[in-house]
Length: 199
Image 1 (cartoon, helix red, strand yellow):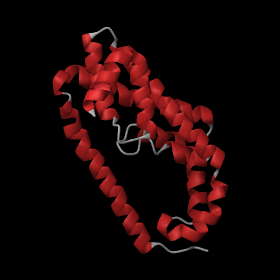
Image 2 (image 1 turned 90 degrees about the vertical axis):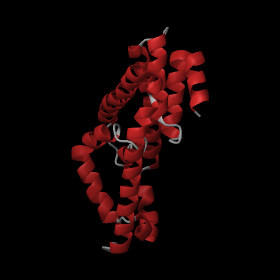
Image 3 (image 1 turned 60 degrees about the horizontal axis):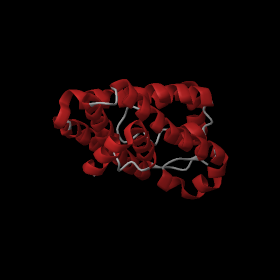
Image 4 (image 1 turned 30 degrees about the vertical axis):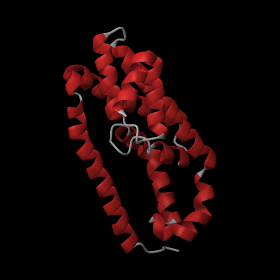
C-alpha cells in the first residue's frame, strides 16, 4: 500500500495528496497516518512545500468530511425512529437517548467534532452525528477544518522530521487506534448487556 500511495503523491503532487485524503475519509483502511507523513517527505525533497501539502491534505479531507455530513443531514434523525424502536438493543440506544444526544450536541457539538477530527478511528465517523443532529453547517466546517488542519499538519511535520523513518509514526499511532477500537467495542458490549428499553 505504501508504494502506490507514495507513487501517487510523487506524480500527482498536491492533487494527489488531496485525492488520497478524500479517499481516506470514505475508505478508512487507507490511513492518513501513511498519506501525510509521505507527503511531508515529498515536501522536504521538493518541489512541493510543507504548507502546500498540509493545505491540500486538509482540503481533500474536508471534501470527504462535508460529504458525510451532508448525506447524514439529508437522511435526518427522524428516519431512524422506527429502526431504533425495532433494533434499539443492538444499537444500544433508545429514541429518548437520541433526543438527549441531540440536545447535548446543540450545545457542545463543535467540541465533539474538533476533538473527533484529531482522534484515530473516530476522525471519519464524527461527521455522521453532526449531520444527523443538524449541527449548523458553519460551525461544522469551522470545527472540522481546525481539527483536520491540526491532524494533517502534525502528520506532515512528523514525516518531514523523521524522513524515511516515518513508519515510527505508525508504531505509536497504530496501537492507539487499536486501543480506541477495543474500548469502543467493549463499551458496546457493556451497553448491549445492560440495555433497557425506556418506553
